[in-house]
Amino acid sequence: MSSEKSFSPRDSLPAPLSSFIGRLHEIAEVKRLLSEQRLVTLTGPGGCGKTRLAIHVAHELHATYVDGVYFIDLAPLADPALLIQAVASTMGIREEAGQSLAESFLDSMQSRRVLVILDNCEHLIEACAGFCEMVLMNCPEVRMLTTSREVMKVSGEAVSIVPPLSLPEPQPWISPGREKESLQVYQHSEAIQLFVARATGTLGSFSLTGQNAPWVAEICRRLDGLPLAIELAAARVRAFSVRQIHERLDDRFRLLDCGFRRGTPRHHTLEAALDWSHSLLPENEQIVFRRLSVFSGGWTLEAAEAVCTRESEGIDVMAALANLVDKSLIVAEQSS
Image 1 (cartoon, rainbow, N blue to C red):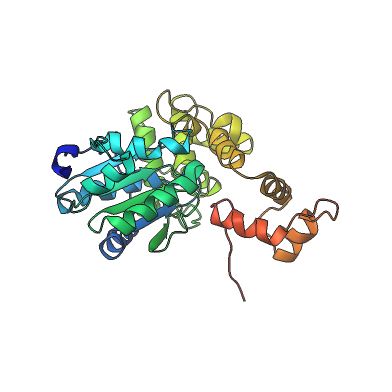
Image 2 (image 1 turned 45 degrees about the vertical axis):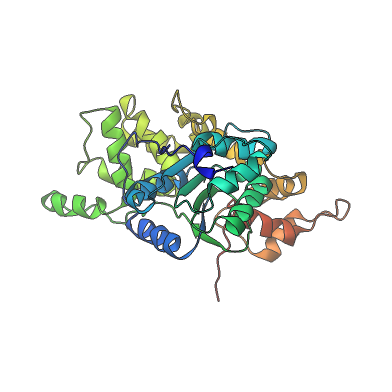
């Protein structure tokens, strides 16, 4: 059966709904990796901007893929068995007589130069890894860009960790006569750029001033440059001053619950984003993750073992820590 009949070229790349801020280094890095590898995974904690980065890079590389760019959001998909159906449906591939849908897909993609984006893979990680491996082995012209809080661990995979947005340097407020200079320093921060862009979208009269800039900077620092958290905080400027938002960040789960009516439910609030990540963990990793919450500002391996080890439970703390690093829930820092 001719693969021409089972392939209906049409892009499925979503148009951006808001401005894309910063990430020049990350954009260049993902482009480089895609030019060298056929599978690139963007990984990092929930709300760090993996999806937005993937879509932005895909738009910039669109002309490179003559047979199209396809975006498949896997967040609504609960059954791993339906993964190939979701991909094939998005790409307009039909099951041909005498073939399974997977065989029809591979037949259609034999010589196609396409970019396939699998978004939100973490809850279907085994199925996604199997699909990616199948494509790598059988479709030499297909490139894949995946977003996941956990890497695929597939041979040939290149991993790009999406970092937080750049934060402003700590800067004591200077004299009013140097306000313009100080504002320029603040505006170099990607986190502040994002806050201002989203705050302006919420409240048209908002602007960064000598009075509110230090408070905006502190909000961004306390939210660790996490785009989702910053966007949720910026949405509050309609009701509160930035100083009032900063002063209430100790209760950030209640403060940052003004999420969006549409879109992925776990991105509606900061708490929902963390709940999603926690719910995907096996029980032993959930236990270790919760016990690590006693630390503020980091910990050593020895301290983690002391806090998390219970002889009666038989939990391998080192293995759990390694898995939490792989799943973007904790960060391993090297020091001398």
